[in-house]
Amino acid sequence: MSMSSNITDALKRAAKSALRQTIGPAIGACVVGYFVYYAVQGDRGLIALKHIEGEIARAEQVLSHVRGERERMERRASLLRGDHLDRDMLDERARAMLNLTHPNDVILSLPPLYDQDDNSAEKRPRSVN
Image (cartoon, rainbow, N blue to C red):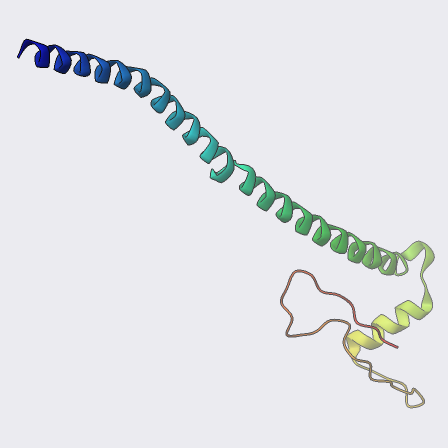
């Protein structure tokens, strides 16, 4: 029995030694895996970064569209200022606001510049011609 107990003891020691040698690297691999997972999938990971970059690109498109519309409105408003009043623009705005026409006027009905049922942030002007 002493020989079998010696073999058993040797096997137990080898198992404990192997277990001690594998537990540290296994825990380290789990920790590294945790950080790698959250570097890709986390709130500030690579996938979230791509999503935020897409949102920034869409916001910049909306910003450029709004800036263009603002510039167009500023040009029209500058034509109505008192220091250099454009009579045609004043006449056009007065007729539109008062809904009046001259008997000799010819009225052409044009389609709206924007779709009325389109509520998206990116409205594109349609061609009037």
